[in-house]
Length: 272
Image 1 (cartoon, rainbow, N blue to C red):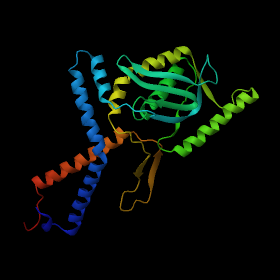
Image 2: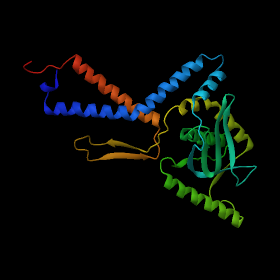
Image 3: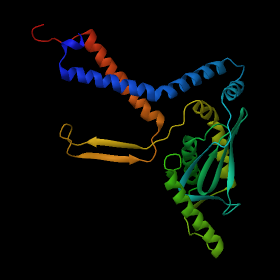
Image 4: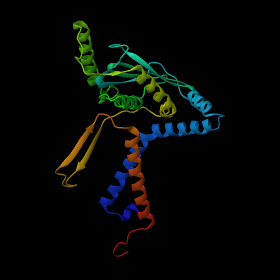
């Protein structure tokens, strides 16, 4: 089966698929190279005497940088019971080395990394662990990320400026409760540090990959194309890169598999 034997529609379809595959290849090339680099260090780390030595080997393979950080805005302010209205820091480290620290300043949550950039995934994980800690004490949780600075820096700065204004007004008036908050105990913070230590190995693996952050839109047509009169859609302020690119790769592999079957087992055409 050759392109000269196909109709214009079939040829155009194949051309579109080739362009789509080429675009996806260029788009995912940095991630693919980072994945290969990550896998190579993971395999070499397994050859080390202990798991801790393997993690140190990964640390040597990462490029240290200065000033790298990721910041998100929370819907609620976080405070420590023993240090009200004061920022506090939680280290992200284990016995193999430090991966920076998380700074909690009211509704502003920042990961200062020892490498080129911070991790939004780590901040999302931290928020979930804060909710678990609050629920474990029978306290109301509901802490969530409302703005991601690496995706929409203007909206994040506007929101954080508003929260800072509310906190400054509280201090000026000597009042409390102008901005909703959740209070963490010293025991909560100690437990959070332990959980951050447990994900250090995954954070090192993630550091080999490019840090792309973007929004997403999910659409579900109630009436399929070509009519497409009614669509259900939902916007997400941050889409997980692994899940989204993984779905894209799965779709491409499925299409390639179907095309390979067509070439191996050509469909019957009248007159052939």
